Length: 234
Image (cartoon, rainbow, N blue to C red; front, side):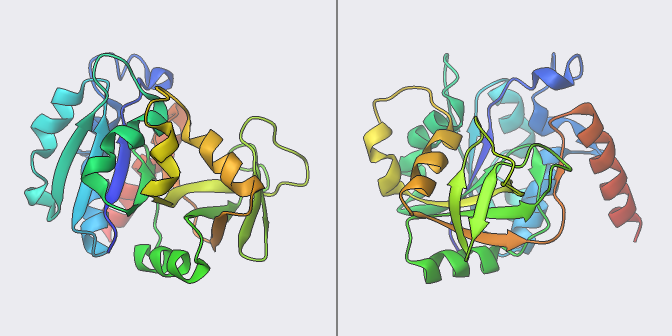
């Protein structure tokens, strides 16, 4: 299966003071660092290679995860360095480790979805990128995706419209060729690339139906804690 790039470099300001001395990826959820829950799930999905795109307190993440063998995956690292590169810039820097195509997963999200289904849909689309979408209807965050006929007609994080009922689920597939023109661009937001691709008909879509869990906010952290506590008790 395709390798997975996990974006785990942000400052996590909404979780302060918890993240004053801890990167968000290592915030404990149900007794374990959140990132280890992600890696365990990826292994169970048949993923073998993961690239962690790190920035804030990167050394702490590497000390906990190591080479990934404890979770059954091979982990390598791409660090932003002194300047945070944003979600897009971090992926560009990691390209030499990722190959021609790869999954992109946000480091604060747990997504109970079949990765093989996502990869299969992307290959069938013959498009260079895919975004998984969830019919959000404004429930978890502002809906920002117009999704029709298995294609993302428009993704607009910055100026969402009332007719948009879906949201980016947090898992995508990208072809490396899409980022070649950004190699000297410096920091940028991956959301802007998704927006551009949607407007020119190059962004396939796959609707998923089970809600996501995230730790990017205090409320999300409480819900994720409840989810993992419940599933681990079963």
